[in-house]
Image (cartoon, rainbow, N blue to C red; front, side):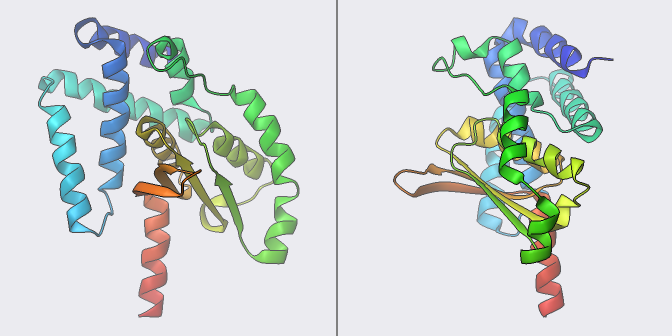
Length: 222
């Protein structure tokens, strides 16, 4: 079964009424908001994101919202099977680049090759420093970071507890895409909606794995 083709089919079906552009990004935004509020300790942030979620949901029927849930299940299953830039691929297969600033995301095979060169001997770094930190100042859909996950898996590195990733993008839609995929891959990451050049930060999105590790550290310290 080709999950990506099935996801494109569902988005096209719902897009007949709302347009593929809105359906795709509403799906990504709803997924990001749901994942962010799983373990978010700050009430003001939780309430803001919950309100944002409800504003989108009220535009769709119950049956249509079930389609978003089905899409998220497909995305989760696909990423658990093998790390891939599913959302970036869907973005191009739906031809959304023509509607969104003519933006193109780097192909996954290129990102994987670059990540392999960047990572080097990950186990040697872990032995020396005890952890690995990776920073991506213009993350797009998160393909470069997913390439790093592939490299870590190839080297039999348990990245979930030894690697921290920090990603930034000025476009909130890119933030959503990267955040959702890193969250579903169980990466401890902070995804920042901000301007890398001016050092401005508009919002911060901590993955559930990062929140879990931070909470565990707090419990041990207390």
